[in-house]
Image (cartoon, rainbow, N blue to C red; front, side, top):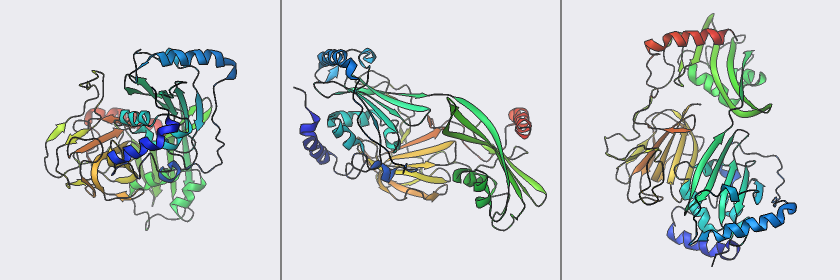
Amino acid sequence: MPVHIHKNFNTLKSFAILLFPTVLSPNILATPIGDTIENEVHSKIINKPVPINNANSEFTSLQSDVKDTLLIDNTIKHPDIAQFLSPYNYEYKIKKGDNLGLIFEKFHLRYSDLMRLMESDLNFLSLDTIMPGNVIKIWKTKKSNKLLRLELKLNLSDTVSYTLNGSSYDYNTYSDPGTWKESRIKGKVIRTLSGSAKKVGLSNSEIAQMTALLQNKINFSKELKKGDQFEIIRKTQYINGKKTRNHEVEMVKIQNKGKTYSAILHTDGQFYDGDGKSLEQAFNRRPVSKRFRISSSFNPNRLHPVTKRISPHNGTDFAVPSGTPIASVGDGIVILTRKHPYAGNYVVIKHNNTYKTRYLHMSKILVKKGQKITRGQKIGLSGSTGRVTGPHLHFEMLIKDKAVNAMTTSIPSGTPVPPLEMKSFIENKKRLDAI
């Protein structure tokens, strides 16, 4: 007989805490979203569960009965349940203080399904990036309250979904490409670069990027003077005429003492000066100092040994003993530290608008969210927290939020634009200058 979450949620939660005492408190299930995710939405949010349309209640009841007949031993045998998933049962806008456990309890969903959902999210960790204002859509069975599908709209352009397939959930992501518009923003230094840049509409992250890129060319605290000019060329995404949060700096210029210093984005995601020399800090290839054995390589097409379905391994596993120092592979800022029932203790570092890295299963985290990190700085100790068979480090590199093979992909090395790419680099520089 199906278990109803509203009757047994606390029992299941207590049982889970016994199973995962070191990772379930505090964690994503118990920590209020608004207290852990940056860029919180502070505006008032009206939250009322939106039920299915009453006009379709008879049809929906039939759908629910059909869906429930597919439930055998807690699995759905039909490989494609999309035909049973319209309309959704509930739509909910996340507010400050929410967490996934509370949301599942609110809609009488099974705690066991929440654990399966988080297990399916292990290779993506999208559920750890939600924040107030995000919208969740829920499909569930009427009788047994089994979660069939969860759709999470992260912003105007990006949506992720989890659809039940057997005893786990298939992860999918969709990004609306929208349209991108380039614009030039110019200004003059009045007192400080930061204050002057904010007045012309630059964000804190853009100002930080500008100074980071040109810090080896200009001493901002001593050499920058009143009247010096600065500008950036920004590319911004629009969807249905609305500006999204997605934008990218393509060029930075600062005029100081009669000289112009430039930073130009190349097709490899790295910035170079006007002569094609690298402005990026070099990255290390590995987050550990010794040549530890790779126990599991990056494989986006890995087949699960039991389900025989594609279950990607989006990182590189290093066979390191517990307590091994883990170092950041590049300069950056810590944007997330978290305890997770499957990923264990992990850290996410944003290096620039292109690169992020993640470090999972650590026994101890030694940094805090918002902390600036330098290449080679110790950020934690390896361990075996989360769902693992033994101590190791799972290391991920993301380019534009897409997982890549950190052992083979091109990473910033401090070298200039390759000779064969100089022609296209110069042509793009001229195009940006003409905007």
